[in-house]
Length: 375
Ligand SMILES: *Cc1c(COP(=O)(O)O)cnc(C)c1O
Image: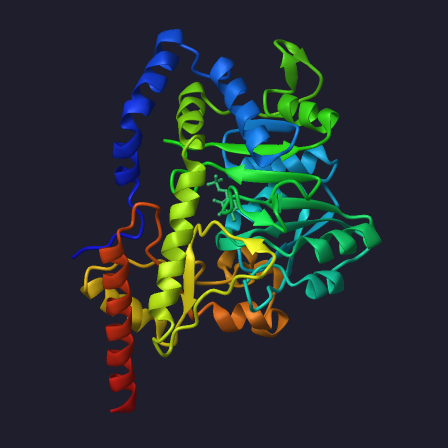
């Protein structure tokens, strides 16, 4: 048997009868950039998240940059972000002209350690970006309290958590803005790049919309110098189709996560992901912790099971941030875990046979590495 890490084709085949007419309509209308389909998708997505405004952009990294700028954050400002995230979170900060300040993650869900964030606050700190990592929501109450105490803005990087809930409300409704990526592999993925900013404030949304479209809301009326960061009509049409299925797909991810948890319960040497009682995660990734990760991943690959690592090196230690001169002691939790994280195959179409096979492959790989270690 072969178990791929993700299988975008399985999902495409399921919805192709809906996707093709939707894309055909865009082609017939030649509404390639912007247009009705984009506006419709923005409205549908905002309603689904439960916020008044959605501004679509070209990708999730731009969404972070533009969300920061829409809050007046830029040059000379510091933005605190967690050490264990995809580099896009940090790139968005730098692109906005602000300075990245890393803080550690907490050991239960690998999301932001709010107490460490508190220690990183300086007079220049303007915002905190929380990342709902792997689809598990961040504990927002302490984050919002900290932000309130220090007059900081909060941005939710929701690129891995479309539809997750924190204490019953969809993530993306807590911060001053939330950002989403529609990269094909995300829970809600386009057939190309795409992204969005959601927020409650209408003027902020209008500013972001203008900024992402050459500084204009009306053609050739440039209220400022902006950028070009837009969603195209074909992607919007695909996303509108997929939005109709996302809750079903997220439920499947949850079922798969529960099945993994059940099967892995008696496998020694595997730390399975924890779910907080206030959390309704959407399982973008299913990340376990194991010793001897590289060897285990290799042995699983030998059995036809693909795995991933999210992320092999925490951001403060990648070359791009060497200039910050961090050491492992600065982020003890992120540093301790980065060598052990292993992402198992996770996508809504994963079959029970594949799940069982994956767990068997993991169990066998662990047993083999234990034998190697003790002989
Ligand atoms: C995917 C992702 C982004 C944005 O990615 P794009 O490829 O720019 O759409 C941002 N943050 C996180 C945590 C992500 O996983």
